[in-house]
Image (cartoon, rainbow, N blue to C red; front, side, top):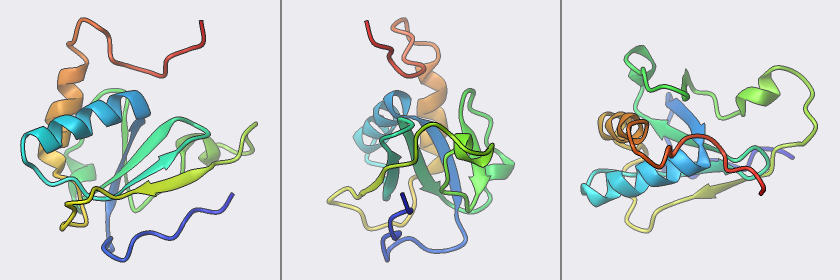
Length: 129
C-alpha cells in the first residue's frame, strides 16, 4: 500500500524515529504528560511500528536501544531489506493539540530509554498466547 500523504504541518527536512507500537505509544503518552510537544505520528499497522518525526539533527545524537533514527525516512526498516510477507498499511495520527510538526526528541529519547528499565519489560511486540 502507498504511504499516505504527510500532514501539511510536517516540514522538510525531518529525522524519523522508528520504534515498536507498544514502546512508542507509552513514550508518546509520557511526553504529552510532561507537556512537551508531540507532533504527527505515522503508524504501520502491518508491522506494528511507529514512525515519529523529530527535528533535523536528531539522528546524530540518537542512541535509544531497539529503535532506529533515520533522516527523512518514513518507510519500515523491514521493507528496506526487500520483499516482505505483508505490505505496509499506514495511517497518520495527529494529536488534537498539535501545533509543532515534530515530537520533542530530547524528551522522547528519555522516555524510550526509561522504558527499558521497567519491570514489565515494555519492549517488543506482544505475541499471541
